Length: 301
Image (tube, rainbow, N blue to C red):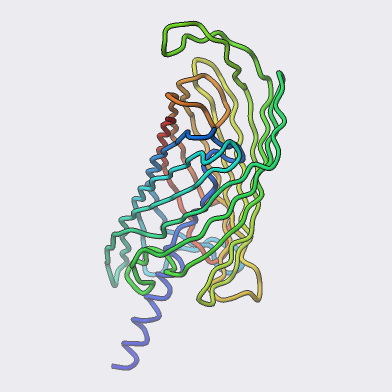
């Protein structure tokens, strides 16, 4: 009986380590901030699946006993312009997850880790040709009542706090006449290319390893409001800072449509954008080799 219980706990621990998918929390809109009183709401819907893992050396292995993991994640992200330079951030995710192999099958669902914080724009140099922005952000993570030993786990069930430095730049800016909501023609600028980069430190409590987090994105406007965008999203666990070390790098790519034809990720009131991405975990250690499809819809008020 004791041997059976030990084996059962071992399988549960293995499922816990290798079924929490790679998912960073980049600041909505990157380094750019909304104006005072403006709001953006994003619906982030993803379908994720994995039947392979990266081991401790970064080699790809099949999950034990023919295991398969899948999840659907819906996350609502809200950003509000407290001032032109300071935005408030809120993220509330919900997840449905399943895991099965030849010996077991389990399902779970519920709220995951709510994150609250702020973003502060330190520098903004905008002219007729491009825009350069530098910001910092702070986010606190708060588990929403689930437990880490559930099967499959919804997360690590530990609070965290992270700080990031964010940089963004646009290129090939042009002036275009635009018919405004009142029917009058107004002149607006649009950017045909943008790049963004984020790097930060995430302190995880409960004895878990702290992490260096990084995120990069770029978009190129093709025409008729459609741009092609790519993202690199990753985490590196710091040696000696705690247990449950995992590293990953996720690559995502897909088309994005903007109601105002620009590649810039932050728009203005009454604008909207929608994007469809496919992603894959391309590098990692002690994490799943996941594939995902992501639908993003963002409204600006």
